[in-house]
Length: 137
Image 1 (cartoon, rainbow, N blue to C red):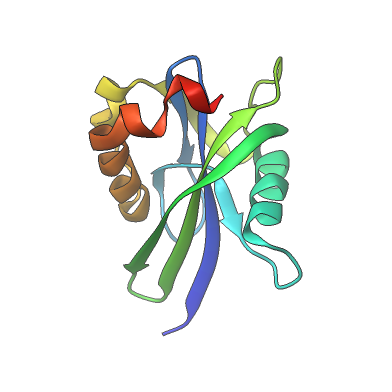
Image 2: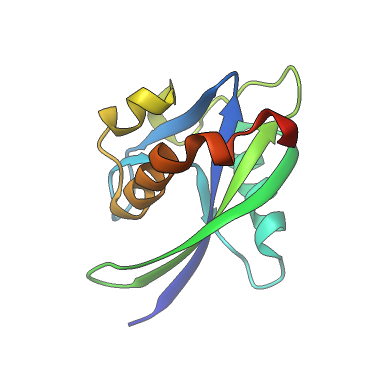
């Protein structure tokens, strides 16, 4: 089984995180934006590139949160997850999703997350205050 290396952006703004509904590809559902890491780039470079390409969004800050490993029927997913702060005054505008939402801690499980993203959402729900402390910004 081949391994696919991807990055995911947990975009934090005004006490909420950004979720997007994926409408194409092998997996459909709600996800944190991101994508494949190219051989010539670091995970953080891939993160910034993917967020720029998918959402037209520049990031002011990022920090590593976690790695999710998950087996799907046709591949193994290795997903590095980063918390991201958008550049002030910029808003995401998805080119690849049919819906987008900003979710509070209480709304995290209101959407049907893709399996690997669901793992992240559940973890965020339990560690929200530790992950999103005001002192980090």
